[in-house]
Image 1 (spheres, protein in one colour):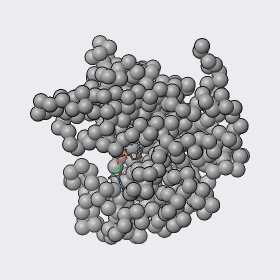
Image 2: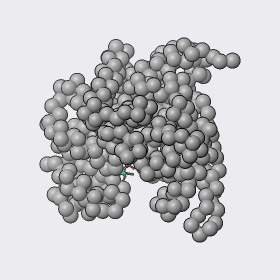
Image 3: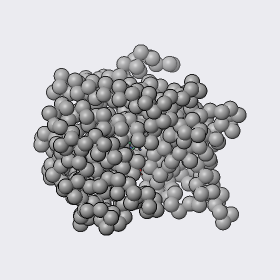
Image 4: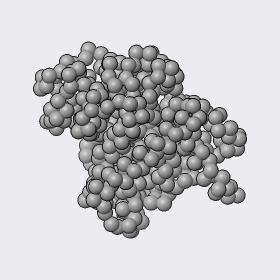
Length: 424
Ligand code: NAD
């Protein structure tokens, strides 16, 4: 754990950028315009607690880029969130939006807090205070947040309400990931996993694999991981291992995904605790060994920095589909490439979430709402087109899929920046 903590996500993100930018032969001024965040806002948020005391929480919002459109990216509530982590996540959002061609820049927010320790009223007060303090930088045409780790549709509603009350208008397009009752979109909950599945369908075809005969291991069983298990199972793949904070569960003959979902539904806080007693499977002594199982497809869907130079040599999967942001360190990337492992990089693989957020924003602005079939059709079109463009760039330039995704995205952001020019 201490080793993982030492890896600075922003430094990793900058290494990825430099690798791709050097291939594009960008000038120093072009790089200066698009590499570092445009604006970092830090606030101290006073919140009245249930015992009457006032506690100060630290909050951040990083707007990495507003070149291709308003900043877009979630808000994370976590005791360990740092400005460097938020900067890295905002950076990835810029290039994620550019890879799939949705007209947004990149942003991310964070509040240093442990939501599990807060009462519902304290959580609401903190969420509203954060949004009120930042209300000048947020807006449907400025910066549009969404949920991230430990924030959810209810929190999005409080934030949207705070903003609408300040502006004295009904403005649902200021935030995405809202529930259906308040302008949310059909298909948003499963969007990230569904987008990943569209990429995996393309990747297996490219590699000559039959998805119906593929085995899959998934690290993380939250929003992205649990929908990934369900959707891939529906596609005919065999899910042999899943994990969450309670441990890793493995059956080489295939797990009962429905039983896993039912275990989470009956446990508090959507956990797999006790799953080994409810279905045929073994609980791995070391949950990190899930990443080294002999499977066709490995899906990291939990945290960053999970595959490092230490465990990368032991990874046996043919495809790694990065549902999580930054799960593979740059050093591990080199090892996996040498071992011919096909990586679908995070900025492409998990872009289904922001893509359906974009569709939610479009629907909010029209005031007209589409059926789920339409959302899925749009998502499939956008994801498969992006996958094919990244693959083509990778083959043409003889680079891996991550560098190819960055080549494509950096080129799009640079061109937009140059077309806009510099307002002096
Ligand atoms: P979540 O909070 O719903 O789920 C996280 C899961 O990871 C939980 O099951 C948790 O128990 C598990 N986990 C945490 N630490 C773990 C560990 N050490 N080992 C194994 N499991 C562990 O979060 P989510 O929304 O599913 O997001 C997961 C990842 O996907 C994050 O990196 C997030 O940034 C990324 N992502 C999510 C979305 C989205 O729309 N949900 C979109 C893009 C990227």
